[in-house]
Image (cartoon, rainbow, N blue to C red):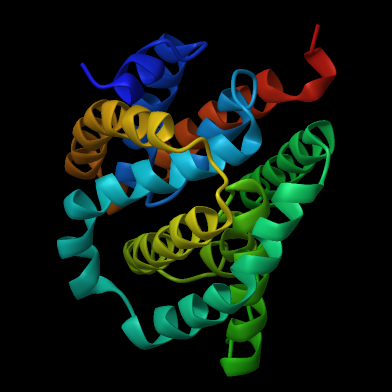
Amino acid sequence: MPEGLWAALATPGAAWLALTIAVAGLVRGFTGFGTALIFVPVAGLFLPLSQVVLLIALTGLASTGALLPRAWGEADRGEVGVLALCAAVTVPAGVWALGVLPETTLRWLVTGIAATTLAAVATGWRYHARLRAPGLAAIGGGAGVVGGMTGLTGPVVILFYLASTRAAQAVRANTILFLAALDVVIVANLSLRGLGGGAATVWLAALLAVPYFVTTLLGQWLFDPARERLFRGAAYGVIALAVITGAPLFDG
C-alpha cells in the first residue's frame, strides 16, 4: 500500500472528517453551497489550515462531475466567467496570507467569515441592485482572496450574490460553476507554493471524495425549488453547528 495512503488513513480525526464531508455534500447537493462553511471549521480542529484548504478544494473538484451537467445549462455563464476570472487574479494573495499568518489567526478568520455569512443569509439580508461588471469584479476578487486564505470560497459570493432576489435554481447553478472554477485555481496555487501536505492530502481527498460524491448526488436528487425554505433552514442549522464546533475559543 502506498505510503501516502497509509498516512491518509492515519490522519487525526479521519472518521469525523468523513462524516463531516458527507453531511457537507448533502447540503451542497440541494443548495449549491455550504461545503466549505461546514467542513473547514471542523477540519481545522484536526489539521493545519493549509492542508484543509487543499483538501476542500480537491474534494470540491471531485463533486463537480455530479453537479456540473445540470448547473451548466441553468447558469448565467457570462456572469460566472467574470466572477471566476477576477477571483483567479486574487487567489495568489490569499494563498500568500495562508502561508504567513499564524494558525490561530486564520482559524478565527474562518470562524468570523462563516458566522457573518450565515447570519446575513439566515436573517434575510438582500442585495437588491443589479450587479454590473465592476461590482462582479470586486466580488470575484474578494472571493479569490478569502478562498485562497481560508478555503471559504463561497461566502463573498453568498453575501452579495446568493442572497439576491434571484430564483433559487439560478443562484444554485451559478454558485456551482463559480466554486468549481475557483477550486481549480486554488489547487494550482497551493501546489506551486508547496502548501497543503503533499501526497498524503491527495490520498485523503480521494478517500473523502467517495462519501462526498455520493451525498452530493443524493442532495441534488432531493433538491426541489418548492421546498427551498426547508432546505435552506436545514443547511443553516448544520453550518451553525460546524462554526460553533470549530471556533478556536473551545481549544483545550
